[in-house]
Image 1 (cartoon, each protein chain N blue to C red):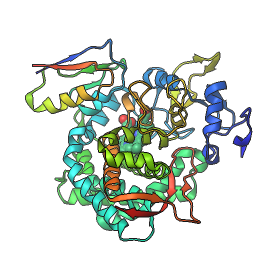
Image 2 (image 1 turned 135 degrees about the vertical axis):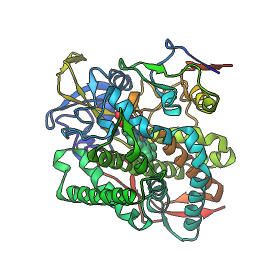
Image 3 (image 1 turned 45 degrees about the vertical axis):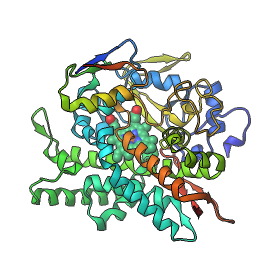
Length: 63
Length: 400
Ligand code: HEM
């Protein structure tokens, strides 16, 4: 599984980081970053929650 | 009160609790005419517009939490007073306990509690929705997450409700607030010692904090204490206000209430509208790390600025008929409410709060046909410059 994140769509709502703190966080400059682009299978649900939570549809999953 | 004045609001003391009683005419004035206001009484700035709050919350280099989030009140070691990496690390210790995943695991247990509370209300001729449901549910869930002993739960809630009053400003940190804080500290110490004695093996949040390490170091005693306080302060009265305020708005509009019964899939959107409408926190403050110009004025380095969330939630630049309570509101076309804040400090408990409001609406609409305030009685409001919501909601429930 691969997390595809489009920073140009990101408006920093940070819903992804609420849904999946293992996978998303703020960088020191205040932007949101993906902590792990290829997360293990047990984080699939977390990743899907983040995709669903993003109001800007900036995140997607690829197999 | 000042807000009878139809034209101009001057010399407003934003820390005075009564300033925020029926505040929407005043907020409308500032939204339109003075979007950045310097409150001379307290020496703090206030902003109101949606876009301004978003700009400030996102600019975490210019606007920091480390100097305090309440007006003229110094910071403590809790996560809300941290910035940057320290904040991320401190928050990460417990954030996995509050994800939507974790909430799905808690849902059945939370629903059982709601069913029980609604069931007991239906046994009574008259109920008080704040105490019987809206306050009881969040208090129970937080107490469960912290594993607070049954017999201490009521007292803890009383102290927390007192401590919150002190968030209005330094002059509101009265003897009662200090006493409540002392009591909470003793309670914390007891819980701490109990866990030490039990080998700290529990899965409750306090045990998690006690076992946690940041860069190889354990949290010190005051960090533990203030995270513990913050969780109680953050999660109890706010969610109570949302549940009680939401049910009250719905009780005034039978059509919207019935719509939720007929189509429960509308409930999640109704939850967002309720949280927008009630907006349980009046504000959080930030401190400028440099001079910052806005609307031709300068917020000077070291000065605080208050983010007036309930004003932003009624900003007509974003929301259609902002003063209308409308469970059908299309947030994707308008804007998302700011009741949970934004950016790195976005409410940790948002998924929990949403779950609690949703379950309350689901179970109430299922079993109760109508809610009305009994003749001769009225709802009562909290008067505060920190929190908003109902303190009493006397009601008669008509069972289905
Ligand atoms: C409807 C109910 C609630 C509302 C409206 C609310 C609102 C807020 C707001 C406005 C903030 C500050 C955000 C910012 O500065 O941008 C916040 C932070 C926080 N909330 Fe909530 N809250 C609610 C429920 C809860 C619950 C149920 C809990 C936990 C049990 C909780 C725990 C916290 C914590 C720990 C923080 C600090 C987070 C940080 O600094 O990273 N809240 N909340």
